[in-house]
Image 1 (cartoon, one colour):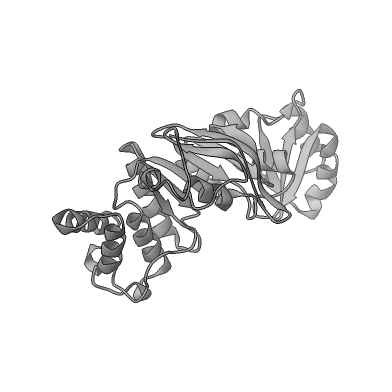
Image 2 (cartoon, rainbow, N blue to C red):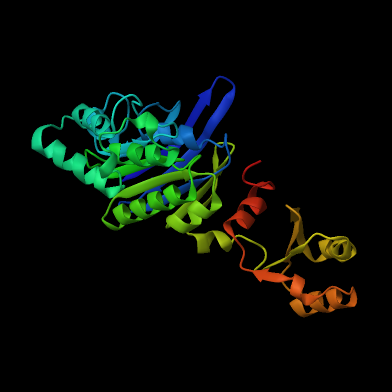
Length: 305
């Protein structure tokens, strides 16, 4: 569906993308995960044909993607990070304008507008001006505006920034339904939980490079540990936690220790040592490693740093 071959993009002295290669298959729900400034939005703008790479090539269905290739660009939809709506117009007027830009009109366009508004629970607000909408409502309208021309590929550039949990879940449900119907989706985010819930395959990007690529289970195999033991950071656990660095990786984030034992370090030894230190076993929680653990392992920093 979409292919990037050794793509590099620079802005003056900043290299936003550095030799990125990527293949997106038809029907895939692909997640692009990385912190702010990692290169996600640059990659999305290249995939949308809004910018051209300095080197390498971007192909959509085997055709070169560029600003000039309008035919190829009509087969994709873009949900930008910044809401792209006319706030002094109504929801229906916005959709009509976007539909007409794609050459739609008449009864066909009206049917698509009705279906779009219904699909994101905005049919009863079709005649309300957008500036009266909540952030979540605007995000949902922005989303369906990108789908009026029924693209084969949808690019979502951090589409849930700044919205409430209810609207976020509504967007998730909508995208999952469309993906089951065959829509290929590329979804950029800096939220771990979004990538874990939505994406069948995830690419972790930082400093303009793809650091890892695969399903969540495949990414987890890159970790040198199989379990995480989480426990609170307290004066009682301070001395005990200091002993653990020789037996694995210990991170302390938001008042909680996360210990990832090295292969061969028995958990029985861990709990025996904790008991000798007078620490109650109820303070410990064994967790399956997460996507955040993969990111920390690859980059050495938290995702939102």
